[in-house]
Length: 245
Image (cartoon, rainbow, N blue to C red; front, side, top):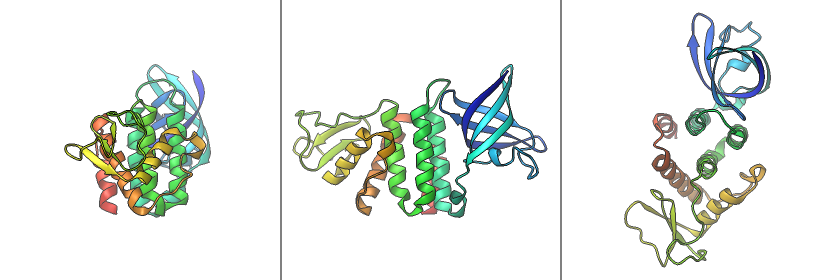
């Protein structure tokens, strides 16, 4: 059976003499493992679509549980990511996150679009990698059901100043009610407002804001700790990204 899909290559492994086993994120079928013959040969018509970060219209053939790429038209390859080690390592990390949270078949459209947008922004704005990382990590968590109440869990009021966030439970406290003890982080109001914007903005506008470098760094530390606590994801690729800084 032949099926036409959109797919983004988020992982690749050599298979046989000239082939690859691709890990492909799709908007409707989740994460697929797809074999491609000739994926390592420059002369192959499937070479470009078999590269990491390649976004393509694909035709796949299914026989039993095995999928094979038969045709592909490349839409984007985000080639700029390969020109900077920080961008490349961060792109590998966010692909790892997308793969981990897109479990099984089902509608993954929002995560798919978020990943595409993140790779595009990162390829065009490598100096904004800290903020792009934070936006992606937080938005992914919000999409899979870990969006915190954006009011103080103690008094029920919307914070008017700085806040304290518990990244093990996703609970938020106003400065008057919260304590910095335990697994909690102090957030300036601008950082809190950025988190609120990431939670509530339309998909096309989620990157359309700015914060100071200090707030971006705080937001990145928060999103990272929150993500790891909520998902238990393997952090090998995250560690590699941080070693590149």
